[in-house]
Structure formats: C-alpha cells, structure tokens
Image 1 (cartoon, rainbow, N blue to C red):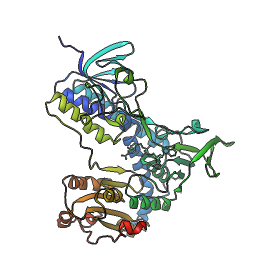
Image 2: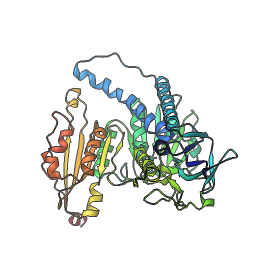
Image 3: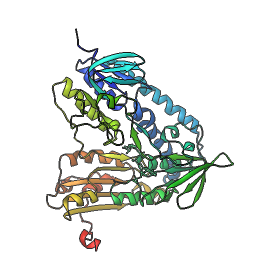
Image 4: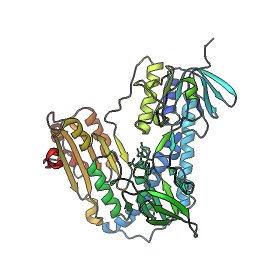
Length: 461
Ligand code: NDP
C-alpha cells in the first residue's frame, strides 16, 4: 500500500499550481489540488485575463477616433459597461470550466476548501487530513495597501474588474504595472483619471527612457499624473464621492479611489512556521533554485515566492518541479531575460537589461540604439503619438543585452525578440536580419546609429 494518499498535494489552483499538478498527473503521479475559491487563480479570474479583455474594450475608443482619417464615418458610439462586464464574466466562467476539465483529464483530484499544513506530509481541509510525499505551495498573492486614514474607502484591482458602473473620475494610487494598466483602461472608457505616484517617474525598474516616454504619452491622453507625492488621508464627501488629501496639502475629489500599491504573498494561516517553512520579511516562501523550501519535501512556485510575479514564470517553475520529481528530468527555472509587457496605453514590451542595469554591470562600454517615430497608421488618423524603441548592447562583445519598446503591438513584437536575446544574439545579427516592411518591428533591425550619451563619470560631475 502507498505510504501517502497522494504523491503531491498542491495548495492553490492558480496558474502555477495547475500547471505543475497537470504535468505531474500526466506522468502518472497521484495528485490532488486544494482550492478555497474558484479554479484559475489571479491570472484567470482577477488579473491578466479579465484585465486584457478590458484593455481590448478600451482600445475601441481609439479605433472610433482614428477611423475618420481612413474615410469612415460612424454615428457617435455608445458604450455599455455592464454589457462588457457580463461578457467578460461569461468568458471567465468558460475558462474556469476548461481549467477544471484539464485537471480532471490529467487525473488530478480537486479538493474544495482551505488547506492548512499540519505536518510536512499532511494537509488538513475542513477537519479532514490528506497526506502526500510532496507538498507544493502555490497560493499566490493579494493586493496590499498602506495603513492610512480612510483606506477602507478604496478599491483594489479585484473590485475594479467588477464595478457596477464606471466612475466619472477616478484617483489611482501607485505607479506599477496595475496602476498604469488601469489608468489606460479607465481613460479609454472616458473617465477622468488622476494617478498619484511617490517617485518622479512611473514603473520603477523599467528602462528610464521608457518611463519618461510612457508618462508623456499618458499625459497626452489626458491622464493627470501627480509625481513625488503620496496620499495622507481619504474622506467620504457629501456627494457619494471621496476627497483624497495628499501629503503636500492638495485635495482631489473623485468618485472612486483605487490603490495599486503592490501585492503580498498568501502565506498567513497556512501553518508554515509551525512545520519549519521559512518565509521572508514580507511573508514569501523562501525557496532554492529547485523551488524547494527549507523543508525538503515542501516546494513553492509563483507569487507566493515573491520574485518575478508573472504568470508564465509561475507556470515554468511549476512544470520544472513536475519534471524533476515525476519525470526523472531535473529542471530549474531560469529567471534571466524573462520578457514582460505592461498593457498600458500605449503598451510596453521589454526583455533583458535596462540601460541603467547594463551600465551597472558592464560599465561605460554599453552602446545604446534608439528609434522614435510616428507609426504609419497615425499619418492618416492624425493621432499625435510616437513609438519608442531601444536596444542596449554590450560594446565589447556586441551582444544585445536588452530590447525595450513602447507603442502599439509592443508585447507581440518583444516576444520574438526575447528568443534572440535568450540565444545571445549580437547587434550584428540583428543588423543582418531582413526587416518586414512596412512594419514597426523592422525598426529593431535597422537601427544604425548609436545614441551619443555623456559618459557617466562626466555626466555625474
Ligand atoms: P508593483 O510592485 O508593480 O507597483 C506598486 C506601485 O505602488 C509602485 O509604484 C510603488 O512605488 C507604489 N507603492 C508601493 N507602496 C506604496 C505606498 N505605501 N504608497 C504609495 N505608493 C506605493 O505592484 P502592482 O500592484 O502594480 O502589481 C503587482 C505585481 O503584479 C507586479 O509587480 C507584477 O509582477 C504583476 N503584474 C504583472 C502584470 C503584467 O505582466 N502585465 C500586470 C499586473 C500585475 P515604488 O516604485 O516607489 O515602490
């Protein structure tokens, strides 16, 4: 008789947990997955997927504006927010059904409820004990907000995806992925948008040129960005709205206040400390390169480890565990050169090192190539928006260290370039590649002139 009920029990049926469980199941492992909410996790139910559907919805505003330049005349369009939300929810139901079927087809047992680890091989769900050789923690994360007076009045991205009605005016606090994406969504649907950030620029950690360019384009679309400030308190006002008071004494009124000030790992109450699983100061599960926690048979993947909090990373980490444990194919996730996109309007796609990171690592011998141009579509549409592209190259080896883009289709274009960067392609190889004409993407293989920069030492003086 088997020693344990299962070979692996996964806590959390989000992207990472589902991917790992399915892959393990496909190799014949006996797997159960425990979920207290719906199957699908943040990406499918409260993040990437519904967000992208709203991004698509908001983009129609541009299409209606731009089409006149191409000879179209349309009656003033009307927009029905509840209809979009209902359609989006229907799609999420469909996806959840697919996830459930995929798990069942891989032989994975779904256990509904909240799981608590009671010893390194046992999980309790609603008073029942389940045992497993391996435990995988894939419980994801949740939005976090600072503790300021009136914080109870704010919404997070969870609620923003399901509002009963669109606000006339919204204040969004934060300058990360979620804040800029929702700023673009709400602006596209015609809301007044004020974004409050505590730094000088949005998207800390992204290439500085991209950050400056994105703020310009967002302001060009009518989004107000208040920099170097923070919110001191929020009060409900007399007319069903809110007053946001900033630390520098400004008062901004709005119908809705959204916070997108980061996410924290879901580890509370899981019993981790009791069984010896160490966590970071922020509560994330500490793992080694094999995704193993400080208890050798307990693993963790995805946002609960709080490293690169991206769905495809969680999926790759989860599959690596299944390959290692159940297919005799030891596999580690490589966290270098992971491409990412921000579905702001216009969107960003990026892979590899920023100019700042490259200079820290490679010194002054870093070459920069840039292109700024008006996309062809904007000639007839009259839209006054530019696309920005940048290559960061190691001056010594000629290797392309980073590709960055802001403009229509940037996420689609960067995905292909990520393969080149991962393969260690040189700038010369980029130059030898024939462009696709006419396209925006061809600019990445036709950048000839280095951008002249002040050497850093001189610039600092
Ligand atoms: P981020 O960590 O990206 O950004 C948080 C923002 O909030 C930063 O601008 C940060 O400022 C600011 N902030 C943090 N604390 C405070 C505070 N107390 N007061 C004011 N501002 C504050 O988090 P998000 O919530 O935007 O997204 C969470 C994660 O989800 C992302 O890191 C990403 O990994 C993932 N994600 C990925 C997406 C994609 O791939 N397209 C889309 C959405 C989310 P500062 O820079 O100064 O710290």
